[in-house]
Length: 286
Length: 298
Ligand SMILES: [Zn+2]
Ligand SMILES: [Zn+2]
Picture (cartoon, rainbow over the protein chains, first blue to last red):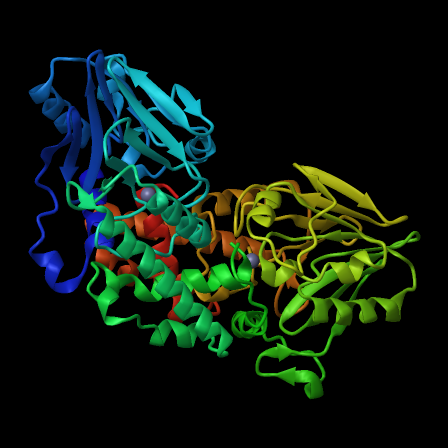
């Protein structure tokens, strides 16, 4: 059922009438985005792996099938063993299927706040982390250092943003799916903190491109700016609606953002439930 | 920190009241299409009362030493509740117990604090309160982990935690002498998932386990909800648990059957629950939340 789940998420994240039909969700590719730094995956799910002088660090295995494919892709660029697997966050559509890396002796790492989620929602395909980090952490292997950065509660409460030291590429997983609005309505998302996280990331001048957890192999910083502006526009529209006395039902039926945002992938499918999530954020404080 | 909005609370209560029970036993003069705007108190026996206003409901327990009260809701509603309490007793307020973290239930606590009350919540509410502060939210003075008994003098309330359900910090407030439990938002008697089924802040699977634990461990006979009519039989809890399990099973069955994901929310049907309030309107939204649970484990 794993592939069906990926199909489902492909649909959830990417569905948008015309563009979705021509989209190839499943052809996996390996893209070197900096020396020894690779974006691996398909439109449906994507991960980072890093080849060092002393082994490989990979990130989200996604599923057993994807992990096997990724292992083969890694073998095409290096004979080195996989020494570490770092989970970006707790959601099953990114963290399942890591056993193949466990079998070759890899150490699994996540933020410590992922652990209660994993404990509460057991899954046979999930390899539990061996180590956890509580905040920013440098993971050094051979000649490279993967910086793990924690920005607090945004897309869930255990998201790690990653950057190989000295490169201008971030791995930010679900914080931004390039040129998409994303699944805006999930309860573990904190809209205000998410916006703050994006603003903090934008303010840094040590990167120019990023790898998301879904979508194209690598995207320019502009794609994050677009998503941040979309969130601001959505939050402003909902606040204006509330302040002018609109009820949730009315807002839900009438929400519409400026033309520039309507072209983002998933807009038609998710704008209403995105607005509803923001409504609850402003009225219930979560 | 966010810009704070106060106006939505009424809008929200209006929305919630639509889904609330309409066992209209309030005087006609105060009833509106949106519930009762002026406060109405119901005596549940042995010092326990429930009071509602503006579509919201809380409880209060009067003992020899003073009073324990549930959610304040908002500053204006807390004032209405206080004047209702003062019609029954002049004893000091000893305790306030927040039902969970949502602002539409927990604002206005200062009104009770000014009467001397100590404010309690489950400890898992605290991170929510720290992250999302509000000028009308008084932080709890005390928190508990699994169970806390509060005694107001020959009258006791038990604060019970049965795990995540509608939120991850819901207190089931149990009154053993009356065999009545106060459950806010997790169970709205004989209605589908709260706030019209669109309320996403639930833990779909733990929800069932939480209610099962309550049913297994607590010999309650009736419940008082956080919205709508004053009291419902124990069966309302069982019914809500069975609806939730029915949803989980039905969505899983569609996944296993190979129904295209986009079609699953619309394909789910639970005819045995068709009489629940909000069934026609919100079943698909409830099912969509379950579908997400099965795909990302949250
Ligand atoms: Zn995610
Ligand atoms: Zn609530």
